[in-house]
Image 1 (cartoon, rainbow, N blue to C red):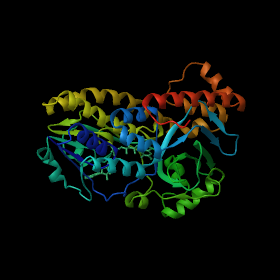
Image 2 (image 1 turned 30 degrees about the vertical axis):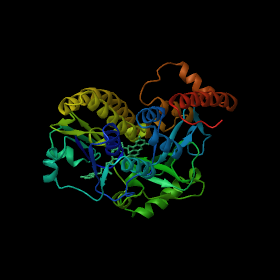
Image 3 (image 1 turned 135 degrees about the vertical axis):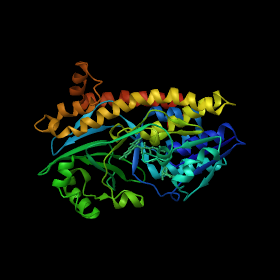
Image 4 (image 1 turned 90 degrees about the vertical axis):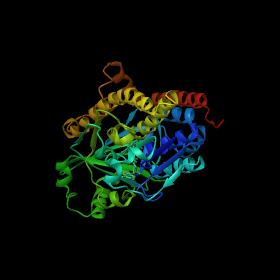
Length: 405
Ligand SMILES: Cc1cc2nc3c(=O)[nH]c(=O)nc-3n(C[C@H](O)[C@H](O)[C@H](O)COP(=O)(O)OP(=O)(O)OC[C@H]3O[C@@H](n4cnc5c(N)ncnc54)[C@H](O)[C@@H]3O)c2cc1C
């Protein structure tokens, strides 16, 4: 049984790892258009659910990923120079995307997966790619050409805001939402630690603020220096850095592409990760969903062992429904950030931070606001952090993680 993955991102690499693990004699190949280490984007965040899934499916790579990840145990909202507002009980993990892909690639190669770097097939070849393997996983990201040349009934819409996936050498300890008011309107970043002492800063604003600040005409470095000034009090004197990767470094400003597909299977070709669905970066889930797609696909292939068509249909039926719900939540979050200037203007930062927390509309109970107010009291916040740490350690032990005494 041959498995061919188009795309060496999290979806393609993890699909390849699981295919090789489950059938050690099978032929598994990954086609990646770029060279090793040449990727877009700084760090990504993830939560416990990804670690649980990784440990369950391949403890080997899970341990390496966990050891390379940074834990952030605080989430904070900073509106200009106002006192920071804390979002209680929140923690997570983060790491550089380049490091994550390095680890997954090394694991895939160790399992005998053949990596074909620098391989970008033309549309005409992609149209016939279904004949190249028993299962072809289209894992070539949000702009997928595999999706474009097959029949997946896709809708792609664009978000309104502009964003750039930047880095900084400023080591942010907490997951930080920082908002600054400029003459051209509000601009903000979603920041968190990455790998090697750097942090990720996804800078976002409305198109009016973007052009009002001149970011549409300034060259990339001049734009970054302007933003260094805007965010100076949050960056501790450090500067913003371009995104890695040739294409994104040259043109870092993007609008979010919301990809939805009405079916993920066309013959032996199946979509996974961003090629099948995207979720706005403000909910930090795309990598987790990509890996979980790979897991669901592998589970379905194990269940329908001698029936690849049944396996793909099973994956499509189960997984698409799970992802649909998350896409709806992510879209709500994206729209909230598009309306942000009107929500923030004149608002009390503590109230605003609570609305940020509740942007998916799932915190309707009034007691939650009371807890949020209590979180602003240092002593109570410390108690809550202690409880969260205990919860985190218990979960780590349950999944078999090595926990320092
Ligand atoms: C600003 C921003 C911040 C984000 N932050 C987070 C976060 O904090 N947490 C999180 O979980 N997710 C985050 N994401 C989402 C996450 O990056 C994606 O969801 C995830 O990378 C999807 O993985 P993938 O493997 O499907 O696609 P990708 O990671 O995009 O990988 C696709 C691969 O396919 C290759 N490729 C493309 N076309 C071809 C071709 N024709 N032939 C061969 N190879 C090809 C590409 O070079 C690439 O390596 C963020 C996204 C953005 C934009």
